[in-house]
Image 1 (cartoon, rainbow, N blue to C red):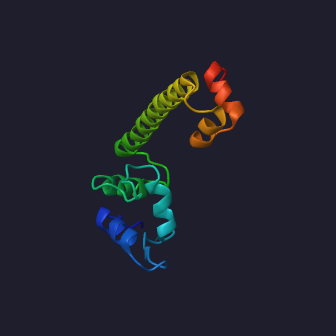
Image 2 (cartoon, helix red, strand yellow):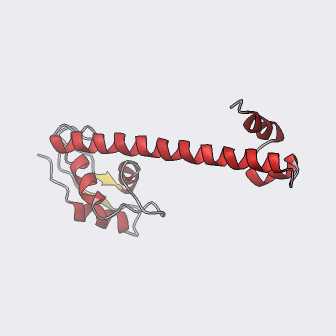
Length: 139
């Protein structure tokens, strides 16, 4: 029989200084390690240091406690998957907006002729060829 893993157990494992710390999940499942948590935490909301936000501990616990390890099957599991899809879409939207803004700044810098293309490329961490591609809207 599988043991139900609580959000508090997950948080305790995460905060444990011991690299060998585990959560016993019962006879049918392997013990949960810190590495397992890292993989699950990559799918939830975290702070800037990668530490799961308060409400996310329960999300991880729901994932861990799904019927088949790693495969959510309940309504909570489907909600988790939808949350992941929504987060991915938001990340892609924000990245696209940031890319557009970055390109606009590059084009404005080149057009202003107040700095050379090599200097703009260095500041942007890009090649001169890529700066010209951005300027010309080729990529």
